[in-house]
Amino acid sequence: MSPFHERCAWRSQVVRFAATICVASVAGPVSAQSQGGLYIAGAGFGFQAAAEQAMANNPEGRRFFLLSIPPETGALSRTAAAPLAAVRDRVTAANGVLFVCQRDVDNGSIDLSGLVPEVIPVRGWPPLGSKQIPKGQRYFPDENPAVLPKANESLRRLRTTCS
Image (tube, rainbow, N blue to C red; front, top):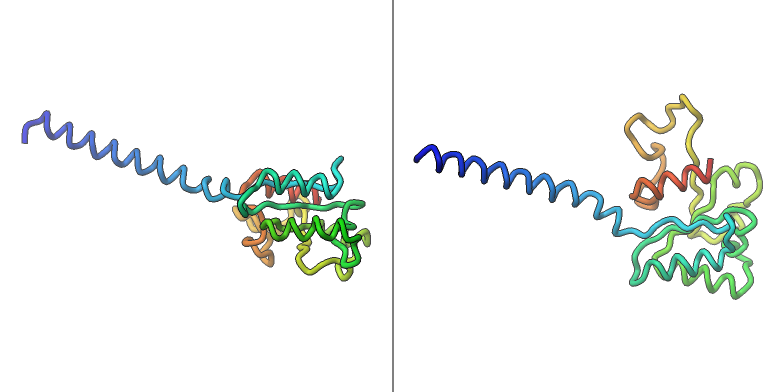
């Protein structure tokens, strides 16, 4: 094989390798982007407004996350008024995941026993210097990563709001 053909063969292998790296680097974020974002009821938005926005932005069953902070947790109650309960049920039917902050449970602002079973309490960031989340990990050891956002930005906002 001539030196010219050897260089071309080598270059095409480099190009194929680079293309493979590009495809692999795009494939990771795609799974996180296939999920919808985090919506927060209680941060200037009522539960119904946050829920409607979340469902409108995530059509066709795309998974999204709705965090309710007091006083916007009434819709999550087993005894919620029928219109709020209907919105809550539409959220879960649309593949929405309902969250409350563990800190609100711990300080008595929310009684988990009074909430519908679909609600998941989420912890905020551990204190600085804590080893509660192992180095290089995104989740507490006893958390179920399958119910939490895969997107770094959504998980960061969730933990920050619940800190």
